Length: 238
Image 1 (cartoon, rainbow, N blue to C red):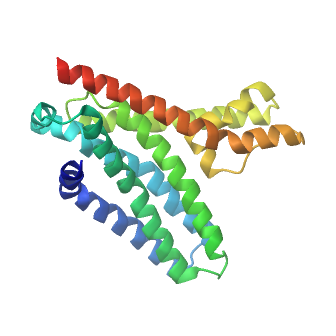
Image 2 (tube, rainbow, N blue to C red):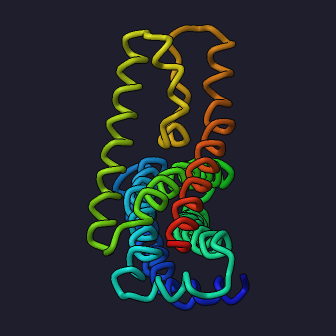
Image 3 (tube, one colour):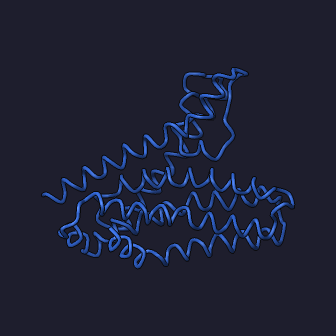
């Protein structure tokens, strides 16, 4: 397992550096110039990370190796399939969370306590990481069988677009006071990044909505990961 993690780190570390540099530069320049409010700027940084980091991570993990022809050799190694998938998943999590954490630390150093407290910035970062990882799992699993980075990128963009449409549809359901549909808010990856919507003052509904993503999103992620492992195991035996 350690060798697999080192392999992934050696191949993907430049993406971690690129993502961190991009988001940190955006946060540093924005916080210094103060063109908009600190909260708005941090939100822009987070949404840039949510939109780009899962796609960047997904494209380079399995589809890139398929395109290079090295993935079959990896499957041929006497290593359990779950370790291969776990190593790539850990690297993907680092690629998604690392740059967001770095950009938040830069924001705290430059503007912590100015318009937002450091704890508020950290909470915003944690919410964004939740959305980013949720999107990453969907993209990662659904692109396992694709033969190239280009096709994986297109599919990942499609998943991001569908997630945005789902978010918009659920927000519309909330606006129409459709309680049954609005209860599905926690199925959207973007549930992490918004305040919990509510159609009325029903405290029970608000509590269910608030805890929904924390309870359901890990279950969805685990189910997707196990499905991806099954696909990978079947491919390795073929």
